[in-house]
Image (cartoon, rainbow, N blue to C red; front, top):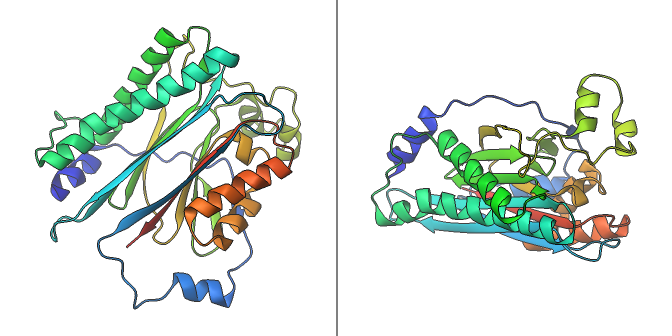
Length: 301
């Protein structure tokens, strides 16, 4: 089983996408360093610790975000693999269409990945039909795109998904929700690139980060599910940071709370569920101008 999944990753063609931001934060305290670097403690089997949080925010009257989190582990003493599917979708297009678009996209992609990976994983008879993980993720996003066009015409949604198998995480990304790695050594790293007008202007050197944060078109996306123009999602595979975190969030979080503050909140929390609630509180205290969703995954081995 383990070799089967490794083969899928080897067949994948990984291409590095520059992070939209990379923030160096203050060094960890001696107490924090001791907590994350005890060489005598090994977690067996390796596992995922997961927390989620969501809020309508302070200025919206309804929620258009959808989060999807599923994780499991199969340990038989030989092949000990944690497994997880984590998705954030931020809907657009008004009260009804935004909600339907994000829900349809997240559920369609989540169900597709569970059907292709989790059920065969449990049965002991995995069969990817010769496809790599990247190809399966891309096909899943196409299914989600069709679901949005069918169920919410005129609506749209971002879609940022993580498939975790062992210590490998494959990210599929469309829009401006984000995925971050939060490392135990004090770094926070965005591992997705926003598909937004202001991000493109920043890349071209026409505006800086401060100007982007107040730009009147900062919410305009050039790539999202529900658009009729053909597109391909960004898909990349990374190694999960051991004793660090994977954070998926909508722009209601990262647009209100600075990266270094998100790192501080996560590092100070006793476990991911509480960290997510603290992240939501911080976004609301900053004005909560949008819906807020977060999924925090810690990998321990």
